[in-house]
Amino acid sequence: MALQTGDPAPEILAKDQSGNEVKLSDFKGKKVILYFYPKDNTPGCTAQACNLRDNYDALLNQGFVVLGVSVDDEKSHQKFIKKFDLPFPLLADTDHAIVESYGVWVEKSMYGRTYMGTARTTFVIDENGIISEIIQKVDTKNHTDQILSKND
Image (cartoon, rainbow, N blue to C red):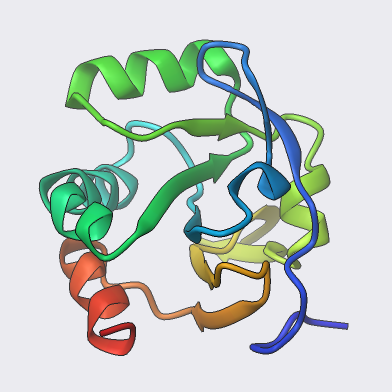
């Protein structure tokens, strides 16, 4: 069954780009932007990450922690962070445990070919670990505005 607003956010356990273990429960008492994106260094994912980077101070001022998740590995995340000077951690979900628990590992199609991939989705999680918002139609160039407009 798909996650909905008001549901407890599933716990995550993953390594970030530096190999540090990250758990969602580590952020209890803080609001978390948990954003899922398909692939490091692709145009849409870069636009989204850079929009969050460019507005990072505004997000911090609103009490948010930003965590990006893709199925890329730590080394790929390191390159992506370095290339675009991203100030937030990216979690490596190479075993697909997180994308599956959040229901964003889905069948996609391109050029008539179907394949499994990550649906670009953002979960806003409140201080108590409850999903307060799910953004499925992500505007990669204006993603921060999407988040802040509903969380003022």
